[in-house]
Length: 122
Image (cartoon, rainbow, N blue to C red; front, top):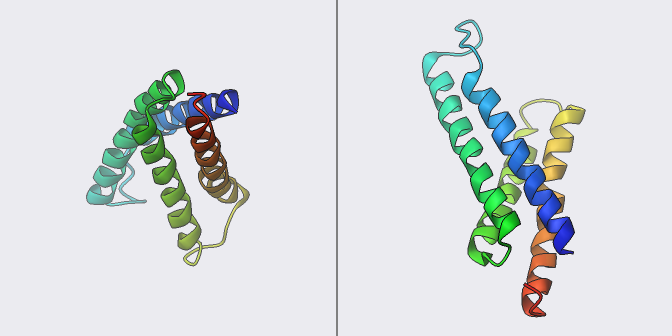
């Protein structure tokens, strides 16, 4: 169980730093968005990239229960918000996969982590 949790934490960390970096460094295109939306997107991308540090830290030290739970709840809320946003546009396979990654594994990891904590294996 712990190996599964660590692998997914590292995966989320890599996704966070990669997609956050891309979001921060994408060239501004005024024909697609205005300056305020671009600025907000870059700000959120920087915060998302910064969470990679937390994902990597918890993968190294899984006994950090509060940080682990915060990350899992944040991912779950992000997936729910993405799913609710589908009322505005049709889903694509990439969006569905993103929603899946943000809803299903965090629930499984949360339950596994709780079991490991309760049995004293962490």
